[in-house]
Image (tube, rainbow, N blue to C red; front, side):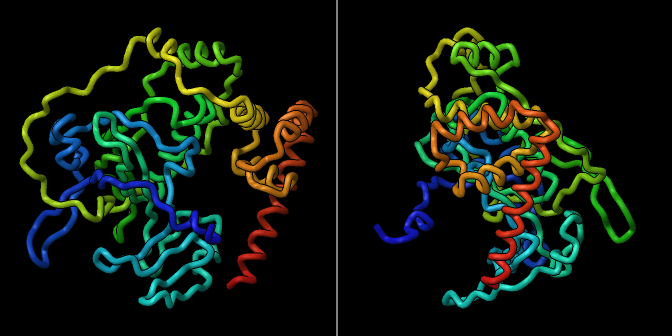
Length: 352
């Protein structure tokens, strides 16, 4: 097979679910966030023209696969001209003549809320499957560093507490919140409608499910609270158009099944190795080790990524390792993870 062909393979994308509409005409046209999801006719026929909640399934198991393409971006109209990860940027030119360089943000790596002099904004994409529509990816384009971080935190929590994301039903909703942003006059507040992820399962149902599978679940540690909730003025789908007239919904959003029905409904089989890896991360979280640090630690110890760990040897070794003195375990993980990140940054620096 062609080397790196996997990097060009894309799942079938059915379309986009927008977060806003365009208002005004001509030079005065601008995007405006709305309270509901802006859905195409195929979804509107099932859930209504202006749904604020949608049932979804995820096409992949891991949070970073479902919420992806997370970068700072600069656009001219609908064209992306610059992409950056906060350390290295890529200027996108015609005919593949892209230019790379060091991002000015690299001077303040710990200041996530530093204003980009070039006007780049945090962007991401959430891939979901929508029940009662065709099998394929519906994509939601997100903006705003705080909103993206909150959604990733929810995905990671459900991954740690429940299991592989693709095996369980979820709901997304437009939650009304008061968000703080900064203007030239100083901090301001405004009403916003970020995308939030909801699970129909209670803690008791999750415990019963894991008990039936012989798994001990654990939640990750609570994230550090930020003083500022970031939101972009134009957190909208770049392809959003004016709402179309759609016939009223023919079928309302079905409520979750009864607790017993959900637990007894034979979810797709989960391999023991996959469950054990999840428990490894959950155990590390109990010790105060972040998923990012533990992932880098495993990469440093086994010289490969998490998906290619030497099983079952790695599981046995990590169970013994995580059972040691918590302070020693944390110190070891942080040291190895720091070395891995340092080597990675040095390699990226040489490429530039």
